Image 1 (cartoon, rainbow, N blue to C red):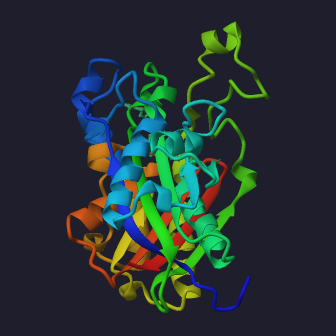
Image 2: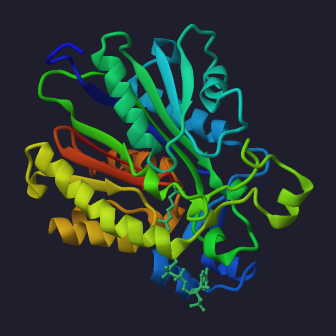
Image 3: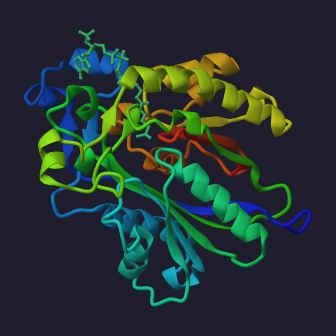
Length: 333
Ligand code: ACO
């Protein structure tokens, strides 16, 4: 890669959430839980749930259209489409190809999915940056589209209260000097890839779909929440601090920290470790729950559209997810 090659800049953001709101009180009618338990343990008050005929690509298309509009560009201006999803419309064709078709594109821009669970948007931004720095592509649509409520077991109170549906998107292109992405790092701790910690155990090639799978409800998300919490709380604050140091910055130089929205207690732990006020840590978990890889993309779009994020400010995204995957992206907006 050429030394000093231009990194990416975000020139448009967009997001989309389903209309349907499911509150904690609604969930009290379905499983043995309470609004108080969910709020206290997670920070979630309500989440959005996609209507039966809405798939990840539908939310992703809306978010992409809004990002293109914000960038003032037609879909034809895009020369690569990346979609992060852990809840694709189907195994194949990719959700990215479905979105490209919905946008009315006829090629030849490549379109592909990226799967890094909840870290997917960080991974996709990192890959987009590499594609731009290589000089092969100039305008990339990076989308994160999720409908995790399709994969939760609505009889399992330990998981069904946590997740929601959403999509976020950004249009990126080469940045001018000193702007755009300042630092990006992604990683994995595969020692935590045990499927009993966090997975959808069946329906893939390890355990194809069958009557037994259906009866055991193994086609739904299984999670040992306490184990996931422990890993997240011990790794996330350290990864964030290390990224800030490696970027040659001080925590005070970061205007906005956008962590993956999984649990408000994990977000609090990051703020505490960095010694920054929660005013600079964006959270929307109360309204959307955990929307997997869409969470940071939606949060970014909300910050932009509400006018809270100003051009020239510095933003840090930090994500973690099943695998165990993680990512940190720092950019000057
Ligand atoms: N309502 C009421 N009680 C509940 C509920 C519920 N919805 N869910 C669990 N409980 C009960 C448990 O049965 C348990 O009862 P017991 O003590 O009688 O056995 C008790 O509450 C405590 O359960 P824990 O699981 O220990 O509760 P914890 O404080 O750890 O909170 C939670 C659970 C919210 C899931 C937390 O562990 C967490 O947020 N974990 C991280 C989740 C996360 O970050 N996931 C990211 C996924 S990323 C991706 O890639 C998809």
